[in-house]
Length: 119
Image 1 (cartoon, one colour):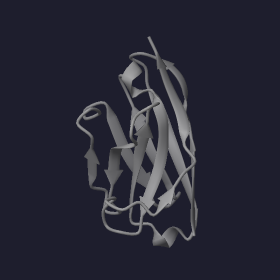
Image 2 (spheres, rainbow, N blue to C red):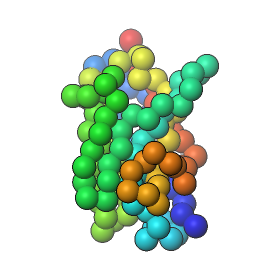
Image 3 (cartoon, one colour):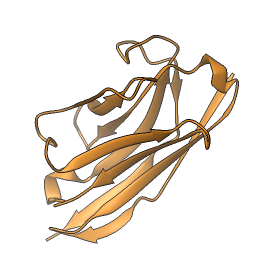
């Protein structure tokens, strides 16, 4: 099994930055693709960014140019650098991992971390 634990969420003013981290443990060799989802109140969970084991990244249109996803294989960590944050970015952010080469199927989820952007 794989365990994913997010950290780094919090309250930030609009225009500010925040960096989320995800620590993976357990059967980490089962992990291939990883990514970040978010869910705002009353809305469906959406994929924000994903990254393959080879380092290829994809982003939702709403965050392109503002967010950067990265992973450190040696440290078994995943990060999401969020810049120019806006109130619409407010959501619970979830770390996700897949045994597949892409994140089209999520096999492991973190518990989520709250990001609140105030104006």
